[in-house]
Amino acid sequence: MRLVLVAEDELNAATFQTYVYLVKVGKPVGPRDVMRGANLSSPSVAYRNLQKLVDLGLVIKDNYSNYVVKEKVSKKGYVWVGKTLIPSFAIFGFIFIGVLIGEVAILIPHLLVGASIQESFWLLMVVTVVSASIFLVQALQFRIKQKR
Image 1 (cartoon, rainbow, N blue to C red):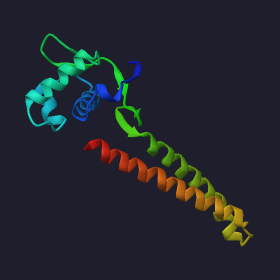
Image 2 (spheres, rainbow, N blue to C red):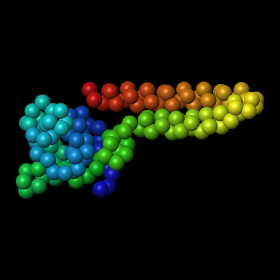
Image 3 (spheres, rainbow, N blue to C red):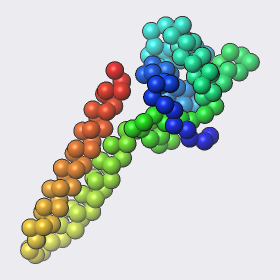
Image 4 (cartoon, rainbow, N blue to C red):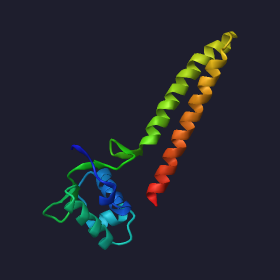
């Protein structure tokens, strides 16, 4: 599948939620399955969302009236990792956590042998912790905002 970016106004939250469910399932499903899996209020809502996805060319309907993903799209601020949609902020947060782990790995031997540690290294660690925290909190807020 090729990855496409769809305009924000083309997919509302419920339609995108329907689409994400179809990607995660990875097999043809009917409107009732979509209703249950995507936590929609009724089969008619699921059907309307599925029809919109078909009209956009992202989903196809097979001969048995089941729907399957045709095009994999991303929404602004999110990145697909396998079949999981992750806020971009989380990726940066995890990168900073990796850097912090590296800094701690450098720090521990110095502390064990009693070697002096420059103030700039402590400042670097503080900046890394703050950066990781900001990105992870932003990712959490972004995810909560998108679910509304």
